[in-house]
Image (cartoon, rainbow, N blue to C red; front, top):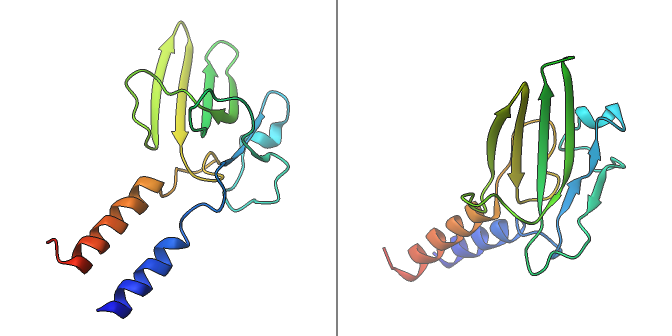
Length: 143
């Protein structure tokens, strides 16, 4: 049983981010068209940068904002670091949609390195904690 716990612990420990900050793609398709299509495995991208700034005690996360203006059919993608979520949002990978007067916006927040790429969001730290809790509770006999 101890060997299984050690193996699970080592595997789960590799999922923990190595630094305290997060790396996000930071760009705008209005400034550089290459920003519109970024792959998650593109770790050499010039757009992938560590979130730096004053966050007033908030933990930074990655954000992807897609804005579609129907008049002129203009689509803009902005990838950035965020630190404040919407009033009712939790700190979990999520997307919200808003529209007003021919402008449609989709804003997605995610909480792991290079997660604001072109495809969907990836595993979060909360999933890691849940797996760790389940593993530990089975190991110490809580369940």
